[in-house]
Length: 356
Image: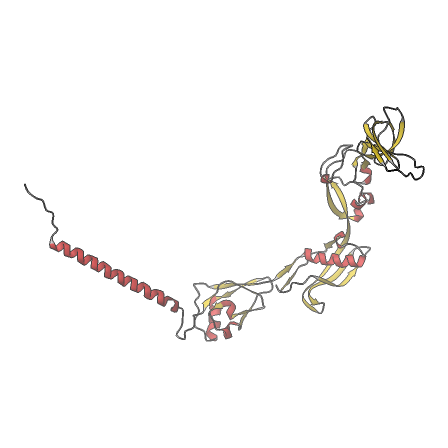
């Protein structure tokens, strides 16, 4: 019997021990280098005086009419940051400054060469508050309404030529004011100066405008077609404003009585309702079974009856009591309901009773 002992040579064991030791030393060296880099990296951007190295900010937005060194460069001394270096674009406009010009300005001020990160130019935007034609029109309508004694929402401003607008600094948050207003009520023509500012003598932004002030009225326009006799509901209408000069008075929404109204004839969608298009709705139809309410000072009776004719609310019609066959004159008071008021013969000292 033989034994097979597999034994590594001595040289192989030594090589294994040396390999492990070498790996450990290399790992320690790498760790040391990493710590050195981590500890010294924040100081790489620090100059010899212990101050951070200036660096280009990139694209910026400014509020004033100048661009300062601090707007363009980060990590500059406070006494340098507020120095005006370039003129800013106009309100709401954009512009660019070449990086070379910024570096030259920094050199003139004795700053170290800033880091540019490869940028060749910087984009500058001048912040502004935009005031459009709608805001100006609202101010003019308010002024005309005060002058003419009309609500401002009833006045439509139509500008002549190019629509006006203004640009003011962002901090100018006041409302648009109107001064030097010249208004002709007969033609509606007007001219005025609109401005933003504490007063007319301390204006931040202004614009001269010419326009026409058109008085408008509300009308009711059908959203869907109606057939004759269809009841008109609020959902069937949309309210629009149109020039009063083009709208007959019987089409003014303020003068329309739409309660319990039906279409007098077929009406198309988009039609502007007029009083002549409407008829009062019959709450009682001829031959309909109705509820008759008989009222006196101390007695209320309800009974069934038959309508001899049709009627709208408040209209007096004839109804028949089917039991007594008596014909009564009754007032239509609701849907399928009429009321008969008995004549009064003076005060009666009794408690009213309700009999059904």
